[in-house]
Image (cartoon, rainbow, N blue to C red; front, top):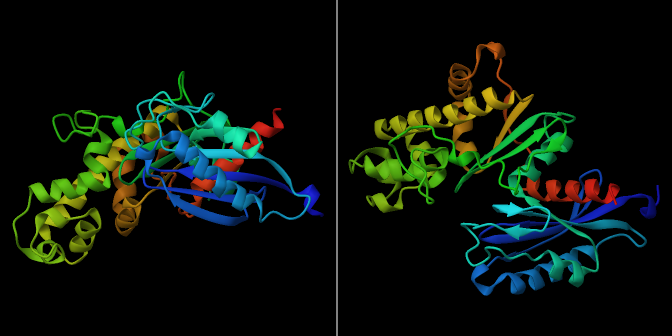
Amino acid sequence: MTSSNIQFALAADIGGTNIRAALVDFEGRITGRGSINTEPERGIDDTSDRLAKLLQAAKATAPVGANIVGVGVSTAGPIRPATGTYNHPPNLPGWHDKTMKPRLSASTNMNVWVGHDATLAALAETRFGDHVGAQNLIYVTISTGVGGGIIANSEMVTGASGGAGEVGHLSVRTGAYRCNVGCDGCFEGNASGPAIARIARDRWTGSGALAELAEGDQEKITSRMVFDAADEGDQLAQDVVDLTIENVSIGLGALMNVFNPEAVVIGGGVVQGLQRHWQKLQKTVIERSLPGYGGTIPLTATRLGDDVSLLGAAQLAFRQARRL
């Protein structure tokens, strides 16, 4: 097969801290990687111009005569996919009601399609993850925040204005911690990385393995320290991990009950800690799900790592290009 027969897409992943770009072929092979700091305070136009240079560098690695179908962009949201317009994005301050889509299209002279990062991660899982071909799949990322992507009947669920999948704001514990946008007792406010650290800080005793890991300073506590201290038998840390598993299970069980997916895939930094308690997590999710699932819950951790967003962005471009 010659390079002219192979389809490629340029893919970008925009987060609050970093932006990555690469060239991706239809089989998911990634080349031409590059990254820059997001620095959203510099403005969306400045970021668009810097991203365009990153994409041009990735494009330069393509074989001679390569068929590049366009640009797929995975981004933190909320965002309206049709226009690429942001809707009060908490991690991209100053970008509300703005879009980089026209400017990026003009800079690259290519079609540009934009999607929410978790939604595109779900799409990537159906193509390259452990559930290839799944028509109904939920992807949940548990990291600095909690977000979700929904594939139903093989289509991305985006909602009326692109806001579908904000699963971080499901209520898991009324009267508990709030997230940064003020939702009472929500998934994100009670099970994200910062939430785990905050709960541990509020229960601080100043002794034990957690105190040692934090060098005696409760403000240094991270979610990773909590999981590590729990492994060392620290009772405070174990209690926080148990509470985290319960909170995560309530959220995941609710998604199972509402969507009846073939699979729920979780990713993000907190998953590394949760994987050490996988059997307990699965058992607790089963307890929170309808009995129709029996003793088998279709819950897995992603094996695509950070590439899931780039792969999803490329898949968006391939899908949309076929519809032109």
